[in-house]
Length: 216
Image 1: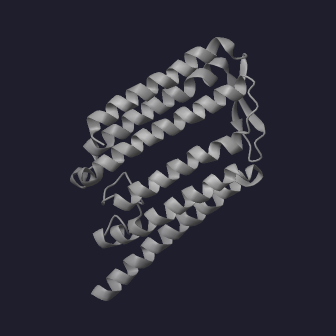
Image 2: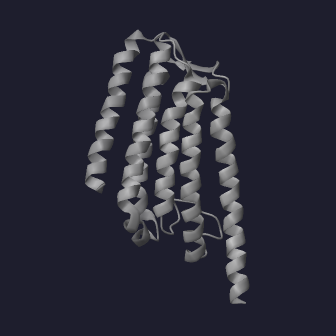
Image 3: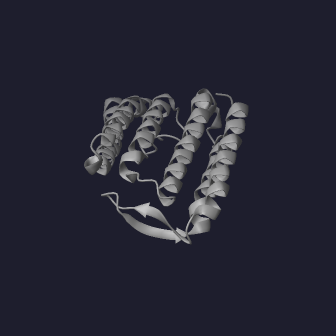
C-alpha cells in the first residue's frame, strides 16, 4: 500500500470514528463504561465526551505519528524496503480501533454484547497482520522486535523476525479462538502473546551469542 493511499484511508477511518462519536454523544448517559476486566465485567468509567471522542482522538493522533516514523528513523532507507507493508499495518491499526470504538459505543447504548468475546476477533486479525509486518521488517529503530542484539546485527534481526513473524501469526489465530470460548478469551490472548514476546527476546540473544562465538 502506498503512503498516499494509507493517508487517504486513515482520514476516512478517522472521519468514520468521529461520525460514530457524534451520533452516539447525545444518546449516551453522563457516565459511560470505558474499561472491562478479565472476565468482561465493567470496571472503569468516564464522561460522555470520553466515551464518544477520546478513542477517535487518540487513534487519529497515533495514526499520524506512525506515518511520520519512517522520516525520523536514522535507518529510514531500510524502512522503505517494507514501507508498503508498514502502511498497511497502520490502516489495520485504524480499522481495529474503529471496530473497538463501535463495540464500546454499542455496549454503552444498551446492546447486549460480551466485550471479551467481541474484542478477540479484531485483536486476532491485528496480531496476525503484525506477524506479517514483523516477517518483512528490516533493521530499524522503531518497527519490529527491537532488542540490543537484533539492532546490533542484520543476521540476528533477520532470523529473529523470520521466526517472530510466524509466531505472531500463530498468536493471532489462537486469539480468535477466544470468540468461541469467551470465558478464556483474555487468557488465549495474553498468555500466548507474553510467551512469544519473551521467547523472541531470548532467541535474539542466543542468536547474537552464536554469531559472535562463530566469529571469535
